[in-house]
Length: 345
Image (cartoon, rainbow, N blue to C red; front, top):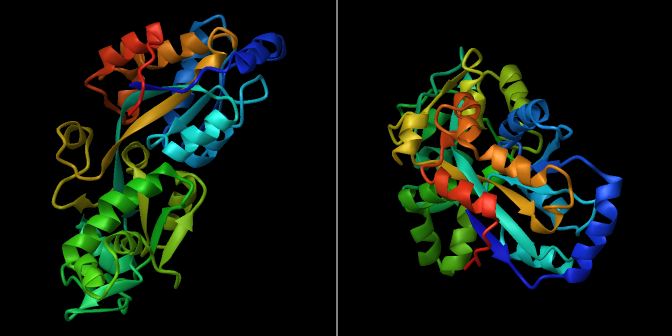
């Protein structure tokens, strides 16, 4: 866990102190749909075990949650933002411009990104980043030439894959999962296939080639999902040939409907993620508005409860749902308890 500390705004803190306590007595949380089920489990248990109201937990995606988080300090703004990626520099700047000057970053554990399909659908059981890139990129390398993607079936570029129409439901751009999907799958596939090298050889700068590597087709075979994983699951239910991008925990709670593919020959499990073997994994976070601690009743207690051994440890309910427990959880607990401010790089 780390803390982002900018110049303190005494005026903003005074304003929230004066108004928030009287106007609101429950913790308000929004953000990542991946973190949502974990936060919901914690909120329910918190309400049952503490003399504070049950926190209100909403979804909307990492970017949306952080945008709301950075709107300002006061009872009409949320206290906690859930995120499946780290906060960006431009978001820290936006927070500071609105008086949110002390941001507490809490890493709760790890999750994997998986590719899953209808349990009785085509045998999508083994992918590589190159396969995903060749299926979804607008331009691919064919016979040494960079061309508009001609592939309509998975077997067009990999005979080991099914002769089924390409159709992928991927996270929309407001989701933190999209960033991980782009960086660890699409960009990796672009490099592995030689497409990035071909782009640079054709005159693109490296920066432009990196951006081009993240693009996806717009001809209907790649579909952005702006809702949560339940929407992706519904699309899979109605499209037998489709594959979807999910968090590991969501897949593990829907194995009666979905089957999962390996990536680079590695099965996604909590064990392979914990060992660093599965290539498409990421840390999960929540962010606390430090100016609200001591003002919004239960905020400090909620944060400490969330990262306690009983909740976020390897034998806790979050691990049972699919979270990979953070090996540095004890350090996180100490920093949350003491609200130790660490300046980010």
